Figure 1 (tube, helix red, strand yellow):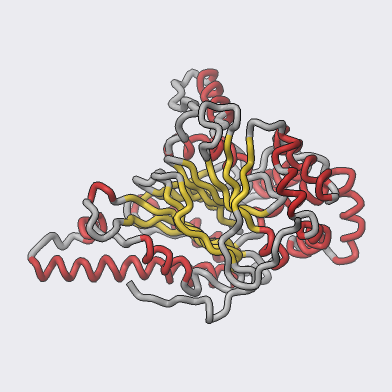
Figure 2 (cartoon, rainbow, N blue to C red):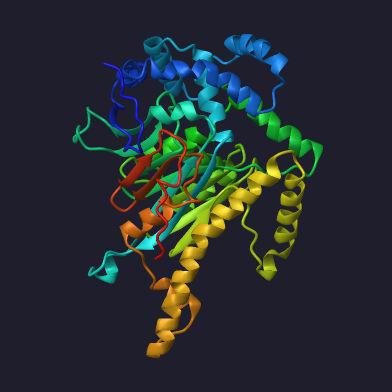
Amino acid sequence: MSHRQYTEPYTPPRWTIDLSLPPRDRYQQLARHYKNAIQGLTGLFDSLLRDVAVPENWIPTMNRLSRFLLRRVNDRSQTEELQGIAEESGIPMYLLVAFNVILDLLMGCTSGGVRSLEKGHPLSESKMLHFRTLDWSMDPLRQILVQLDFVRSNSNNPNSVLATSITYVGFTGVLTGVREGLSMSLNFRGLHDNSSRTAQFRFYFHHLLVLLGRRPSIATYLRKFLTGDHENLEALSRRRWKLGQKPRLKSNVHRPPQLAEIHEAMSAYHTTAAYLIFSDGDSTMSIDKDFRTAKMRRSRNFIATTNHDVVEHQEDQKENVVAARAVQSAARNAAGFAEFLDESEDRLQCISSRWKRLVARKQKERIRSGGSVSMEDVAARTFINQKQVIDWVSTYPTSNECTHFAVVLDPKAGTVVWCRAYPEPMTSEHERPQET
């Protein structure tokens, strides 16, 4: 039985991935079901090459070279998972490898967290919900969106869902995921340290090593955090012992890593540039990740990230502000990138202004009632409900014609609150402009 073709916005179908199975067998049923649909990855690779500015006359040669060079990803288990998908679907292994290591370079996204409380519930039940949209130009992928529920059948709770990922069939890393105590999403970042030829070489050489399976992709790190494979944290702890420093990171498969642990771990690893958003339900953290750095922002009320650096104006960050503005100014000179940054700023301004207007309205109410008028105090006691979060994330331009899916995650419960996939580019009929 093949999967159905969707014509209207839909909830991605749920599939169970049993991590107790041999890696080669985990995704075979899924690949069998979507066999015809993922045949489109063959033409997708050529489109990916065009998107990264490969000249048209080089594409046939790149395909031939890729067959010999792209044989694995860095993680052994994920390589075996991809081999199982290739065997079941008939898709060449090099196409699956390319799909898994290039996908996170080409996405436009909106991610963040906002404090939520349902009407009539006590303040102690307030929590941050993690919202996320994934925007991309590759329309064929709209039909192969799925929700993967990870389980371990050989555990004491074989039917218990350990973690959930919203992803594409054939992609074994994590772009969007949630488990009890932790949610995460990854946004494309087009800016990186290009201050010297050495920095440029290191950055692009790293990309080459990821393509060749010599280094893990950033989506592989996220999967380790999501599924409880904390060997990266353990390795960082061991390295700190060697440096004579006391390690703060402690791996425990029964609990997710804490936000501080994630920040420290990602600060130590060389990765591509990306924006990483994590939430534990109490606060939400956004990391501006570059090859060697990981600058962090964190909030217990509201935070949002799109695809450009947020320039803050604190005096003690004056040098960083100047540097960030210089980088973004240079990026705008790149062909086609100025429009992308402008669109990213529009998406951020749209969803951020909703929060600011809400806080301003609450502040006026406090002034009239003679209460606290501090913006920080008011923000700390400002909430929206789940329906409002869904309205915010599903309204244009936060969701737009490039949006493949929008989702709201509950890291406290470890569940997907709401998800909507768009099989066709979004139109005004799908928009739900609703002020809150």
